[in-house]
Length: 467
Image (cartoon, rainbow, N blue to C red; front, side, top):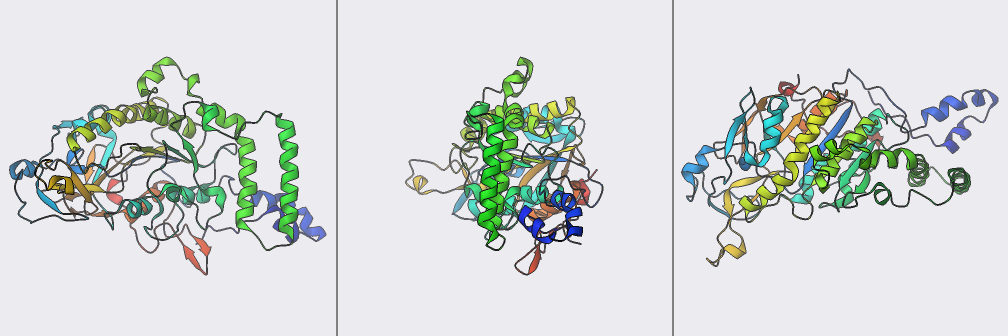
């Protein structure tokens, strides 16, 4: 069963209700045409919101959540499996420079990179160690993780969820993206593609520190009433422009974006103004840092009904540690670990944890053997990093109907390839939709003569991680 209801513009509604009987149904038709109105999921949801902490660049699974003692024994030697090549040549095994230990009653393994998150929340976290993707390329793997297809223009999972569920707050977008700068493949990561444009992610550059800067061009010096009159006039001119043409989805999306921007002025300013939080919350999150601000804003947004919030970490220096992994992953961990732990703590304290699905990971992992870059072949700059690895990596989930204090699946003894209970990105998406109340095979949209879905013709719900 498709949930698709044709995107009904006001002009299309008026065309369809030209008779006297039709006029009686106009209010209902217009309400049905509101793309952000709240919709019911197909089944009982386990979560109402998603916060996706995207570790941009591909963190190393064998240096974070997937300890491999065999790498210590084989350090400096060619692994018995031979060279492990993804994009570039690799050499000898590289032991993790980070210490691992068990945390919580569950004894969940984690390295010192995320020790605060593990120390406080190990028993609520589900670590999937058997993730795998299709390619070792950043652009393609990021599109796959975000949109379900690495090559073609497809709607992001946030757009699909907003299409399926609408927004709980009509004065805020259903899908917000918090990112300092732009990641690889930039806006394509939160596109709406052939879904109506109102469902695409609303991007906020979190290098900016105040609500007014984040909402550039939304606030105006003229009064709200005068803005309303201007917007009504602009909408009327747009409708007249559209009247002599067939339905124009891009124009309809532009009109809806103007309306949403108008409604956002007061509500969004409040949501993004973290100065209203007490000093204790600022200290908890480390809100004087970019990622600390992002985590705090994410909580404030879902608290106000935003459906999906993506938070990117690792822009100026991504988790793409081809060299100096010991130094770089330690630095990135210091930046992200505390704010992530704070978010989970705060969600618990406010009663939001059980209704919020938190996802954390990147587009792929890294090789257990050293990458041999050009710089390392002269004998003066020894290789100290890892190459991209899409064959096996880690993503963890918490809250929102997920079993905590457990690992699911496994990579081989060196952490190179997923070998037990393998989970593809399509499976992760199917599980995400399931927890939000959808059968991933039934949440569809008719376009270009066929029904499309986030998982295309793939994907299985990972039942073993569902509480």
